[in-house]
Amino acid sequence: LDLSAYVAAAPNPVNLVNMVDLKLFHGGMSLPLRQAILTDSYAVTDARQRAVGALYIAAISSEYAGLR
Image (cartoon, rainbow, N blue to C red; front, top):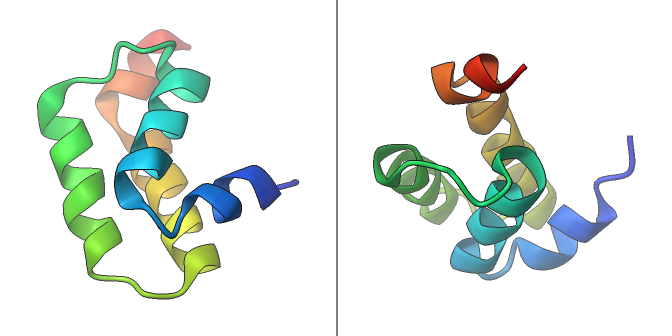
């Protein structure tokens, strides 16, 4: 799995969340999910871990499960 685009966006958590929103939710991510991912992202300093964490939270969300 190529995470390079997400890792590149990870230094700026808002950009990372926007990318996850566009790629996984087609721009329809809810504000509570966005806030949860941002909160977690600011707690992590490693870009790869930040990207993986954002994708993980998005993928296990009920919102994402509802899109499948």
